[in-house]
Length: 299
Image 1 (cartoon, rainbow, N blue to C red):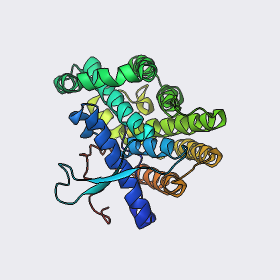
Image 2: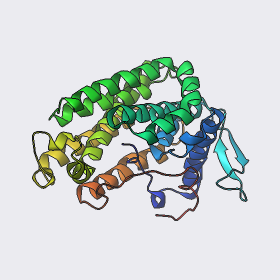
Image 3: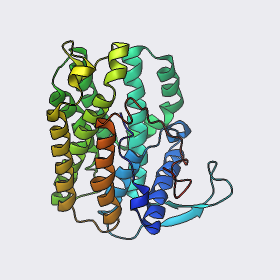
């Protein structure tokens, strides 16, 4: 379900791009430090976006160090370290990855999911011990979502709400205490989660129809042909993007505002156009750590 938050690299300045990659590498290193090499393989821009948004409401410039890694053994790369938002995002990535595997194992009795859970178990326990409230919240909301899916819920809004509340909670970590900032971050997270769920369900219609899998757009025997191109879907997604932008404007960012703004105003809109036009229909977005920021001019 994750993989829809992207970065329009050609819209960023050279310095902005380097800073974004430093956060990406920082989350990757923090994930490894928490004992989960497996979770690094599923590291996405979504988790990096969480890290950079939360870091950017905190005072102080990010601390970066230049280090090599397995993905880039020759040329050292800048990484943001010793940042509570980066460490938090890494832990959240572990929690989400593990609990998604648990959900897949329960629904599909997937051997791959069970194997992944075994590999990530110690890191999950460590992250869950540190962020127990967040772990419990994710499990609670995934249970609600699973119940809706099992009942064949035909309301996209209702199923999207269950997922949106996960990101609403994750965007308000305990180390951010200013109440107006927390409210704006919660609204940003909620609408981002809603947008991700709806765009993912829309993008997966053909695959889910072929596999007989649940999809809120297809509930009640509907077909992709009937559901694609409906103006109300585009209106709902666009309205949700506008809510994300409104929340963004309410937040007092201490740094990186331009990077975050370009991701919201340019990259999310571009991804929505791509999905609604069918250009990346059904694409699965598994990305290996370190590969995305390897070249300045890659796609």
